[in-house]
Image 1 (cartoon, rainbow, N blue to C red):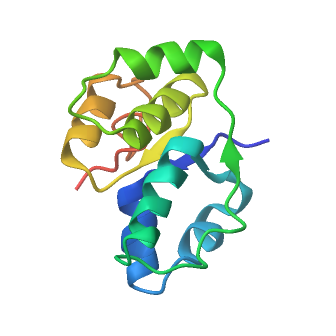
Image 2 (cartoon, rainbow, N blue to C red):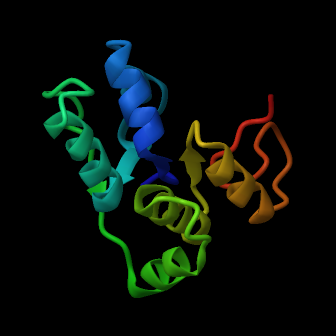
Length: 127
């Protein structure tokens, strides 16, 4: 299996609102995934009537290991549970975090893996 691309709620919400929930699958195929915490954040927005229902049914929800749970808890409380869990999985599994949240991108940059190329760390693309 390829390295996971973890989509947090900011990405899930923004793509759903623009009607482009197909993009992660077109770009990354089965590597596109999320966590239960991000899915729950998205669902709260659906229940509040803020974002569309019916998106992301086929997006796999990754199960965190005990190590990933512990790492997620170590991140700043300024990050939401979805950002923390997606970041932890991306870091532990050498994947990427797809996020539009500035604090999450900064946290990912602090976890830089040192890999060359266009990626600063787990899931942060350079501008």
